[in-house]
Picture (cartoon, rainbow, N blue to C red):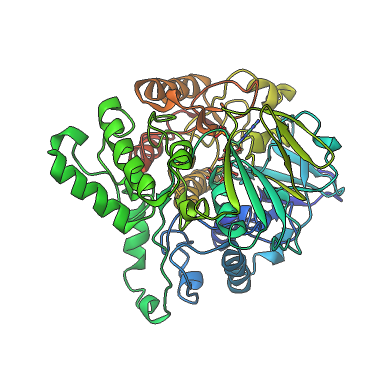
Length: 535
Ligand code: NA7
C-alpha cells in the first residue's frame, strides 16, 4: 500500500442521508470509515438545492433518519420542510453524530479504480485528495448531474441566468423582476409559487403539464412531536409500504368500487394530501389504462375548479392526459394554480408556440417575443444514472462503468454491479429510488450492504462481486415489469427519456419496497445468493 495515501475500510462518496447513516453505523461496528463530499456541508441534495421554494415532497416523520440520537433531539416546524430547515437538520445530524470528523468536504471525486492486486479501490478527487479503501460506497443520489438543454442562442442572452441546481448561495431577490422559467417539474412548480406573488412578470414555459397534487402543508408544534416512543416501530413500518411512507396502496382495483365510492375515496386522498393520490390509491393505477384514466379525470376536475381562465386551465390540465397519471413524477403544490390567476403570471405552451431562439434580451417563440431580466432553468437532471457519469469508475480489467452502461443499465439488486467488486451504491439505478423517499430506501440498502460486509469480516473474505447471471436476471425483471406497466407511455426521467440520446429503459425498481426487501432477504438467507465472495 502506498504509505502516504490514507487507507480506509470503507470510503463513502457523499454526505447526504445514506452517507451519514452509513458512516454512523459503520463506525459503531468498528470500521474505519470516511466520507468524501463534493459540497462544503452535509445534506447531499439539500446542500445543493437552495432555490426559492425548494421543499421535500415526503412528509415528517417519514423523511428523517431512524437514528435515535438524532430524532430524539430534533423537532420539525412543518409537515413538509423546506430546504433551509433540512440544512439545519443536517447541521443537527453533524452536531449529534460528528460526521464531519470523518469527512473531507469540497472533495469532488473524479476517479475510482478497482485494483485487483491489492483488492482495494483507489479513489482520487479533483482537489488532489486520494484514498484507498476495501469498500467503495457511492451514495451520490439520483439527481447530482443537472441538465441544461441545448437551447439555440442561449449564450446570446445577456440577462441573469441560473439553473436551479446551481442557485447562488446568497440567494436571489425575485421582487419586481421580469422572469422566464423553463420547466414545470417539481422544481418549476416550487419556483412558480415563490415568484408569482413578488415578481413583476413571470412567464412559465411548459412542455408537459405537471399533474400536481395538494400538499396539505401543516405547521408542526414541538408538543405534537414530543412522544417518540413508537418511532422504532414507525420506521420499520415504512419499509412495509410500497414507497416507504406510512401509507400504501389499497387492496382493490379502481373498478372494484362504484363511482360514488371512488369519488369519495379520491377526495379523501386529496384531503389527506402528499403522495397519497399517487401511491396510496387503487393498486392498479400504474397498470390499468381504464383505472388510470378515472384518476386523471378526477385530478383534472380538481385542477379546473381552481383556474379562472379556461384557456389557461386547458394548458395546465388538458382534456387529453399528457401521460397516464403518475407515470411521470407528480409534485406537490400549495397554491400553484392560483399563481396563474394573477395578472402577472402566464403559462406559455411551447407545443403550441415552440421555442425558436434566445436573444440578448429574451426569447423568441414561433408566435411571440418575450423579454425578461432573469432566466431560470428548471430543466432537471440526467437523473438516476447521470450521477455516476460524473465519475470515472473502473472495475475489473479496467472496464469503465460508463462503457458498461452505455447502451443499457444493469445491476444486481439495484446496489451492486458485476465486475465492480466491493462497491455498493445507494438510492441509484434499478432500486426503488424514484418510488420511495431517500431515507427509507437508503437505510434498507445500507443495512443490506453492512450485513454483507460484516459477514465478510467474520469469515475473512476480502472481496465480493455480483454474478453476471444474477445481474442479467434482475435487470430483465426490472424491464419486464416496466413493460407490463403504463410507465413506458410517459417521456419521463424514470425511463431516461428526458435526456436526448439517453437509452430508453426503466431506471427504477417499480414493484415497491416490500418486494425489494424480500429480494435482499432472499439473497442474505441463501448464502448471499447472486454474489461470489472470495478470500
Ligand atoms: P424534472 O422533473 O426533470 O423537470 C424538468 C422540466 O424541464 C420538465 O418540465 C421538462 O419538460 C422541462 N424541460 C426539459 N428539457 C426541456 C426543453 N428542451 N424544452 C423545454 N422544457 C424542457 O426536474 P426537476 O428539477 O423539476 O425535478 C427533478 C426531481 O428532483 C423531482 O422529480 C424530484 O424527485 C426531485 P418535460 O416534462 O420533459 O416535457
